[in-house]
Length: 499
Image (tube, rainbow, N blue to C red; front, side):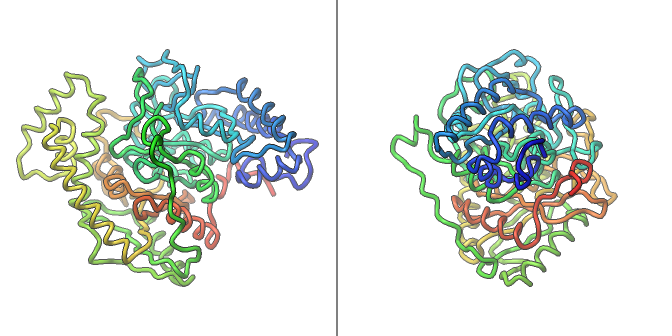
């Protein structure tokens, strides 16, 4: 607690947005004091963790003084006076945007991403940007420019990727809100590894303008699979932040469309119909994760929820995963150099027609021609229809965010040769990590990551709650009910202050 603050001031390290805003409005705390505390904590602790790698403290101090003046005039805003971090690829005028690539080290955009503008308009104070893997293509967060981000729960382990810096910052108490992105589990896996909350929105719900590989201009557009969304330490804070950043781009769809998300299907656990899935036909789930989901399903049932462990309406997860791998690399293929594209196309052409391994499907995706992409997209549309039918019988699906809790750092090359240990058996790293991002990524469904348990060694375990398209409020509401009934975020023991 800072000297001079009232005894009932909320926890400045781990307080929720709501608690901090209440203190700001009641003038128990100023935005400048909150920011000073957050900066001091980053400067004291982030040397070991390395989460907030681009710092904008001077402009943040100016913004905090503006927020204090606004609060003094009685003004209110959803995030007024709240310190916020962003994943490195979001454009912030004057700050570097590199995506981890050394050749973009000196790129500085001239204007904020649309999402950043919305945060600032809501009163948020941008304090800096968090670390990522190079090109956002790993489940660890390290690159030549900024170094390695470590998990606050165990510095020898990954915080996840590619929004690993966001999750590590939240777990370390470096502000109550961070904004990440997700195409292959990049919000959900770090949330699971670091014991925080994260929301992968429905595809297209949050605009991407200003979230693009340098030096591309910040034009309106909609990605294929990729989304951006909030990460926080409570489900309520996810909902609050989503309300700020969601909605069509004013320069494109927003000309004729307005956002009107439906309310949550239910507000009580007793009304929820939940399908709990803890396994996959193509990849094992580690015992720590699988048993945690089993325990959660049992607790939900005891609390009155209608819980099923299987359904004939569930789409074929193996076929879905194969389709996802193809679409994933097709979506990422514009980043390939012409030489790398030629090599990828040659590799795909050499595959046996019957090779349906996940590695083969990713290889086909890299060099996919538009005709093949249209065929894959038609398969996706059929898959989306199957999920739509499933959600007539269920309100949400509980699904692993990853096969294992946070794993030790492994920066070995080549990437495709890495292995991931799942209960003593080695599995291909890319297969074992990416597979859980499907089906929410493939079908553009909302998915909310929520911490639920601890592994035998004390590491966080989370799940993703998948819901119907554009029913983001339902998955966040269920995450909030799980948080309220069974506990949610707790600080890493090494960083928690004595009570």
